[in-house]
Amino acid sequence: MRLPDEVDVLVVGAGFSGLYMLHKLRGIGMEAVALEKGDGVGGTWYWNRYPGARCDVESPYYSYSFDADLEQEWEWTERYPAQPELLRYLNHVADRFDLRKDISFETTAVSAIFDEVSDVWTVTTVGPEGGQVTRARYCVMATGCLSSARMPDIPGLESFEGNLLHTGMWPHEEVDFTGQRVGVIGTGSSGIQAIPVIASQAENLQVFQRTPNFSVPAFNGPIDQEWVKGIKADYPALRERSRHTTMGIPYQRRDQSAMEVSAEERQRIFEHHWPKGGFRISSCFNDLIRNKESNDALATFVRGKIDEMVDDPKIAELLKPQDHPITAKRICVDTDYYATYNRDNVDLVDVKSDPIQEITARGIQTAGKHFELDTIVVATGFDAMTGAMLRMDIRGRGGASLREHWDAGARTYLGLAVAGFPNMFTIAGPGSPSVLSNMVTSIEQHVEWIAEHLSYLAERGCASSEANTVAEDEWVEHVRELSEKTLFPSANSWYLGANVPGKPRVFMPYVGGVGTYRAHCEDIAARDYEGFLIK
Ligand code: N01
Image 1 (cartoon, rainbow, N blue to C red):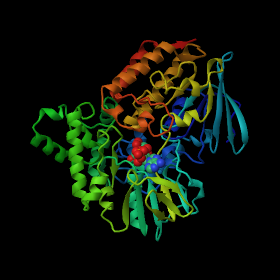
Image 2: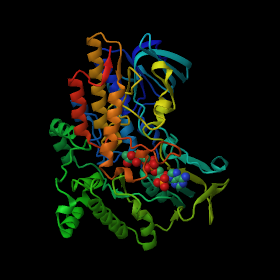
Image 3: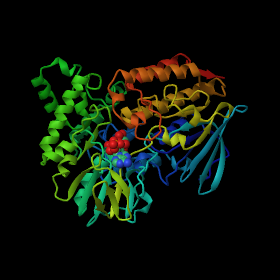
Image 4: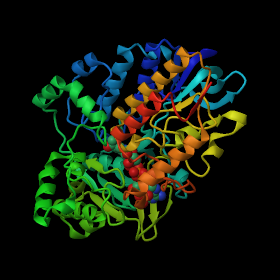
């Protein structure tokens, strides 16, 4: 689709956020189009096609709630949805709501420049139609938090003559590892999900681990039809409850400190939650991310589980995280991860003690050894939360660039707007719960808040809305203060930008929880959008 010359709203991205934003904007009578870099919808679930890619939130909860028929009719097949199923779901949503006709695929936004005289954005894009320029009253950045994949800065990467793959930019055709010598660099969520599947095919798998992460088994399987029936019967109430929880998932969190019970009782509670799978373990006490002692207790419990699952005690030791509190990095949710190290064809290479020196034409050279490989899988993560927006040249009032505004770390008001950048809104941006939550719950809240705000502006004949600097400063400070009351900042995580050399270390997500945050946004709206300059 060729982008129109003028439009009310330009949405950048057609993943979970962009699709719903487009649908919602139509619903409020705005002319809107979206552009999307991929040749299909899906965002994260379009790009991350690596073997084993699966969501860590259970299927019935990791889904849109805005359409009762959609949530009743769609049938999930597994407890945790795999990438192909999520991509099918998002394609179904695009077709069901006839969204494709307003999406320009294979189109990348290069720059967005705000014109203060007309209060309009001029967005320049490149795509199959060549360069295009579109003028939009509003821009909504639905660019995703984990959409800017990063290649590691390892010398010689380009010299590798085998197959080099990044989990976040996985090829569309199936990759068959049968008979191959494979190396995986990185043991975050992506590596941890891909490793067991690759190990089951490859002749030999070398896992290059720099820092171990905590992972808990998903206990995934075919979805329990009785469970889904119960959820579908009670969907409105469950969705409503999710909107007011910490994570945007309707789990009941035990309202008790881990230190309020005896060591035996704590162990019993951890054991009780473990087989429930995934994030449920983090709901078993209310202070796991705030109280070091409570956190240590859970970390010790999980390290004990690693000992139980891994046969070789030396390997088990290497797999135990010691450098960060559990859940201070998003906990990984796996299928057979630790047991994979019991296979004869899998080796763990500790690149902390034997660092990778370079990639050669035929493999990976560490300080101590050369590993001959046919394929290298790079699972080294993303320039998270800010990377996708900063790839564009975004210029607001007075020609000021977003790159400069965020030079010392991302600054937003509510994670929704940026001072000096009128009529631009961000979905699940830094300063909102976003990556600490069930993304779909958070995305829906942002989309609905933005749509309401745009309706408010239209009803009053207003031409622009912009976060004011004081409100932004106070919000940035509030987000920082909240994070410092938790153990989150003590981990070298991508939440802090710690994985990207030179990126300012600022804790980006809002840790106060989905419910508290929603109440805050609603309150701001009720007070005629306090903190916004509207004219
Ligand atoms: O990336 P990561 P990810 N040499 O940044 C290592 C979401 N997600 O793609 O810690 C050697 O977490 C790095 O080591 P270190 C989820 O929110 C969700 O795995 O820097 N190693 C680390 O081990 C997740 O948090 C799902 O020492 C190098 C790894 O690469 C987020 O995406 C599935 C290196 C990167 O881990 C990102 O996960 C997948 C180097 N030069 C992803 N550079 C679900 O389940 C980096 N590493 C929904």
